[in-house]
Length: 287
Image (cartoon, rainbow, N blue to C red; front, side):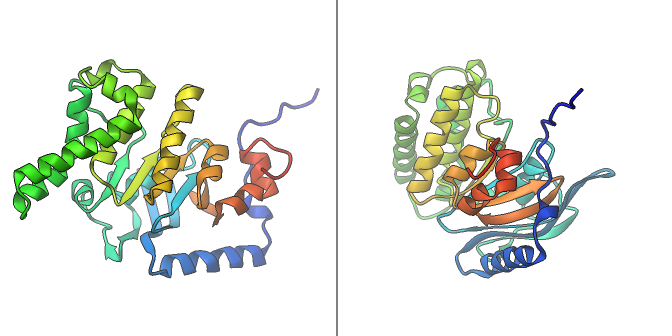
């Protein structure tokens, strides 16, 4: 009797030639040292008790890029993005944002600096309306405006403009603006989570598994918005299990396996790698 093929993606790092690995590492070092580097993580490790979730991970995001981190369930993708923004403590390593060390910065401080995370679980205020959730996305900006030179009227106008932009991007949120967020579908809640992040005018937007558990039509809508954000010049770090869609959108990509980065390369190059195609894209050859 033949043994069923495993549904788990196969490790690909061990089959790479040493010279290929040296080339990849040199390229990553160049990225991290680039003056265009917005976010640079070096040697980031995360532990949950005795479990090593991340082991010395290096990633970098350059201005205007969409960078994706792909990998199977349990690879450490969410641990990585949460460690980058201080939601979970790091067991080692450093993170810099625009050259400033933010390794110990609190998440709320980072929002004020333009680093905004859309978490995997969305973390909406379920008892509040759609519009109230969206307005809370601009809270840090409103508070900064109140402490600065801008008058309240100028801040209010800016928030209103941003709210209209979100409603244009997600017409369904306009229709549901008075609805309590907790009564919405999963897809609508994901739209709301992204819309709330847009209200913060992020300089760096981090998306953690935005397509997870959603119907195909909603997934298509979510990736349409991610594409729009990329084309508008936003800098985006996308954590995504849907490797095919993520690699199609991204400029640069990392493959995370069991807590370690095993590949880092331009997304198109990663998608053409035969081993990645077989293990993560469900293809017998290049994507």
